[in-house]
Image 1 (cartoon, rainbow, N blue to C red):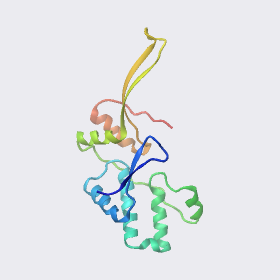
Image 2: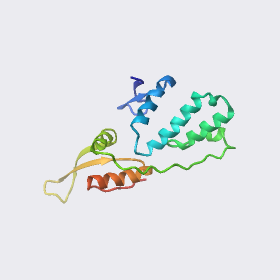
Image 3: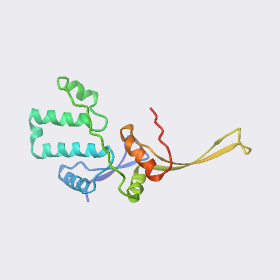
Image 4: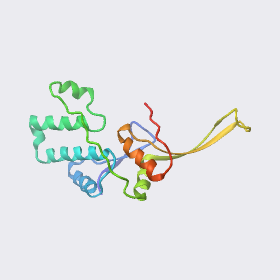
Length: 168
């Protein structure tokens, strides 16, 4: 019941749901309080919720509150952009994150997670070692940032198949 769907500017073949209205944020926070994440996004959510509470309590209108919000931004996702690093050079920002170590709750969680993060591929490629000149390969794949390696290990264990491949 909240948000708007937009065509992605950075990826023209994608659409995204955005909830930007501060009034609507409470619905998002209530949802993820009720249905907690089990990836590192959980840490991002907790930091986001802390930022929401700072703004809700009007603390963002003080320099101390602004600094707290910049510290939170430094910890979420990819951290601070260069422009904010330059604007806040005096402040030592804590770069530590808590590690999320939770088990996969049930197979429905994997189905939902795969809907957003997984892919099913049929690969066909030239191969001189095959009689017809082509090789085929089926692949199920889920990709995550390295910070969620524990989750990937849990998926391999839960499904009792697959492997983890780390790329730069």
